[in-house]
Length: 434
Image (cartoon, rainbow, N blue to C red; front, side):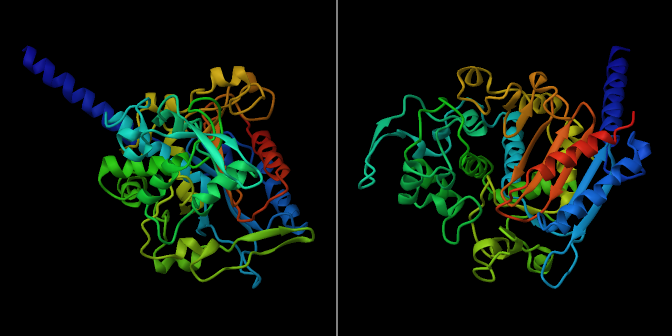
């Protein structure tokens, strides 16, 4: 009898678990009213986006809004080239730093499987990180410098929170940029024509840290190192790991480091901002420069910025996080792990003024920026919203409280009109009607 009851309870658990997985919200198109949104108010976005295009502040792009698993807005605007070819919903965009969220998820999959610990030293997986040095003095006249030994090893958590001392040289003019140039690190972050992911990580390891690990937040090539950690633990290239464990299970059919040739035509050009509006950026070659997604046979997979994707693919990815890690019968991550990702990792550093932001409640989790209760009232976004963007002017956010996700894909750099995004968010939240 006890054996029968045990089998019955086991069957019941499996049945309900399977039902919960299959019922995890899969994105589907619906009328805004079905998701508690006001359709007329959402349509305000049409004129708003077109106005910025007409004023030559943004060339156009693709924008998706989904609430409660319902796609309530999915539209493209503008011309993607000088031939006036319009943007299409399935266009492929360079998502740059939105790659970081994917790398974070991959690392947290390994954390869930007991393959790494967040506070383990990176040198356990990449030996060149042993005995790291920290930049000390710098001579501006001849660009020589001295270093001191790091007082602690760089950990996985340091990399996930950008508190390792690893920087982006190009974003920090002066001594950091000069030192990074010496190690040719200003050449990486999107792709590299000769270095593998391993060579990139080793080069980063040999470069002096900008500060002692854990001392403060500084945005940098941290996720690129984590990409190599994933390769070491999994035994496959980062591209293959992403494909097998994230892209294929979620139905992300158009997400790659390097595009297959039959999808080259769907990669949108990059615009550049000028004082008179914008123009198409100059292409260095068919595959070089900003055309890196069209390069073949490379083994450099930049976990911090190398991916290209569509708006819909990325919406599936972030909807999965909103679903507590479940999508279309696949368990990407567990609920508790997503809670860990979206928890404040900067509490002590923010108190010292060396964290992500000096604005109350604007902070950083693991791989994402985060709004906490203290940020309430700063914008329409709810406390608990986590988000990021990409160098070529792409954006996403996940608002668990409102069950809302947003993806915006444009392709212009530099971009001087961030009010475009902020005003768009105000329209979106103004359309919530329940």
